[in-house]
Image (cartoon, rainbow over all chains, first blue to last red; front, side, top):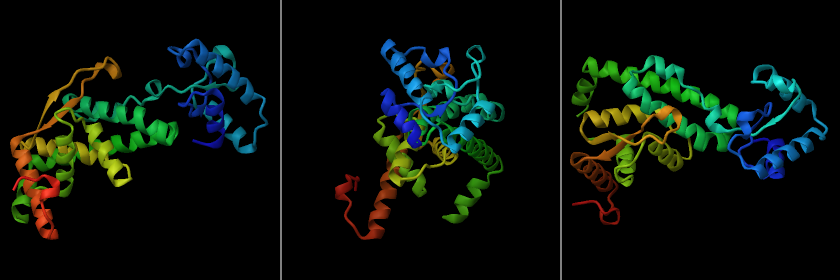
Length: 161
Length: 106
């Protein structure tokens, strides 16, 4: 988490803030009135801040490729990121792994994403990690499947003993 | 003889008291190693242990989130406990240490 987000988080008193995105209705759903008020106050404080060139770049990048609340215009809004809403859908695993195994794989990855990776590494890094681990899981599954089918595993363990 | 990763996973599953999920195992190993462990290797090893009947799993309850999916809850079997004991014993004997502090059955 960058200094900017840490400062924002301290200001708003709301820890899971990880990116600049438009504030949408989904973001504030489930939050208490106090939290919403804090978020709005922090937004105003943030908008009053003079941005550095890197911050401006990041703002345009995130708004160019990130979701945007068009009903509120294209101006920047801080987003209270809800990891559950941001969790990748895991389409890769859904498509490439049998359903009975995919269910547990996706659940494990999404749980790690929401509960550990996002708070620890930030949203973008967590999304990359999710993709990386999803690819690894799919490859690992099919290697294991192939080895089982060809009895290679049995052969290797037999020759290793 | 089981591999070191299998031994570690069996340890975590044993400590989970029948409620260890793949995510719990990955979290515990990552914390122990101070580095994110690959989910691919965890899933693969759990499948392999399951095939060897060293662990068994059952469907847990869905928490209503994440599409209503239910996690697999892993539990160590008698054979798994025996394999773990043997592995830890072998490690300790190779290191020339005592088994008692680890509570390993002799």
